[in-house]
Length: 308
Image 1 (cartoon, rainbow, N blue to C red):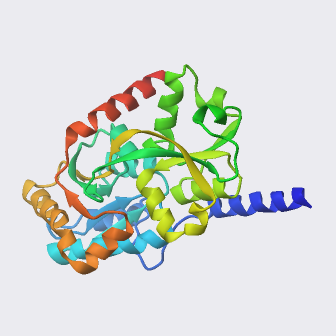
Image 2: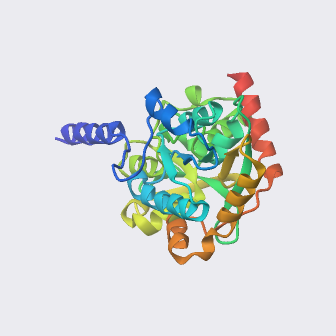
Image 3: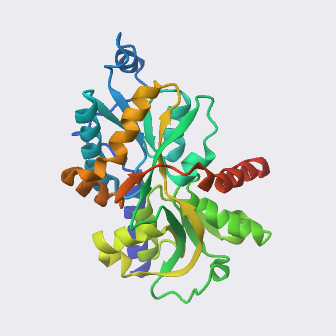
């Protein structure tokens, strides 16, 4: 009976992973349909065409898309231009949109920005701040009943990574293991990607994985939104600190438009309705970015790509 229940649990887990995220109420562009892309991008007046905003939400996508929509609506209201969300599942897909010049702005994770090397240049627009801090740590969790007490105890176990480009959900662990002269393929018995921080927590809480790692701010979000999940896991270690994920902009956009958009994001928290949406994304306000904070991570991703 236990084997049957376990198999059914895994099946449900896989079915959840198989479902994509597509909210029918959110404007959406499928860039595989060239005619649709052309009709939007080839507006005669580029100052009036829609602002395309890309994101890969790895934190309760069905819920958070509503928050992103409110932010996009606010940008639309302030600029007088339609703002269209372009949602993708992975960080790599969003980076590809940026590399192809298919979007104007993107909400990037720390890792997605640090790993970006597209020919189409981008620049930092703003970065997020929460509780007066623009840094976070990578938290490693196990089930509350697990006997695992340290990262080293995870050797030979099953681990849930978030996304291949994620810092807290992948690279922080890979760098830790590199310093121990090993790699995930040798250290873990098996690992897989969940492509969502809350799914990584779910995997550990339901004993699909022995451990997982994610952004410390996500853990705070989880304790508030899904306390039943948070109650079933515990933190065994934290790794370093990293800057929060930034919003980036296509470098080819006119300077006056960049400054207008930067001002909109920097003052966005002053609007009560939008501020509430930002809180749903664990953001108190957007601040002027500090590029040097990302330099060590960009070097880390460069070094890793050479090793691979």
